[in-house]
Image (tube, rainbow, N blue to C red; front, side, top):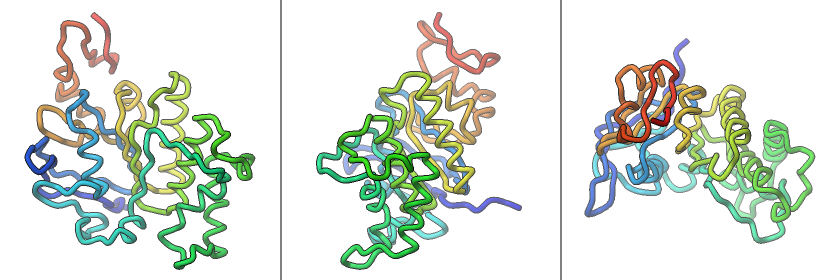
Length: 256
């Protein structure tokens, strides 16, 4: 049975009012896809994410979310389709883990924000899926960075959107925790059927774990499977070869 398409682009160009950053080759994302956005610094990864999430209007073309133009969504409608997890989140007020996760239910609650029994059940399920039930009554401003990141992921899961976007979720983590977070995200796509898209500099890990990769390169954006990305030599041409080179057999970058 074919998977459901949750996002596709049509003749899209991204950038700012006076500057085009890149043209986007039309692509489709399906439910439960685990997708990395890669490219050198300054290539336009953040611009692409901001455009795909509706925070930045496209210069040209359209983005369809579940067959509907993103530009026609109200803010509340968009919040029911797209959730966003930033790379660095600070919670200064003394909110508990459960209270922060409950914020993910705002698009669905009434005007006073009263949680229904369904909302509470979804929050409870999100705590379990991220394995943080033991933290539910802890205050977020007392958590470690890794714990807080899990809380923000649980909030995104509780928002119950078909798409979750993350901006460099493995930034500032050691190798073990980079792998841990990416495997956690991949497992979430399988458990929840949500599509997860994230910007990353961890190209070697993305090649091993992702279903699809969006490459931003030379003012172009295109989506490939990791295998096709390697086969078409896109990674071999990503960086100047005087210091680092992509080894197609090892499927990773090596230092010269």
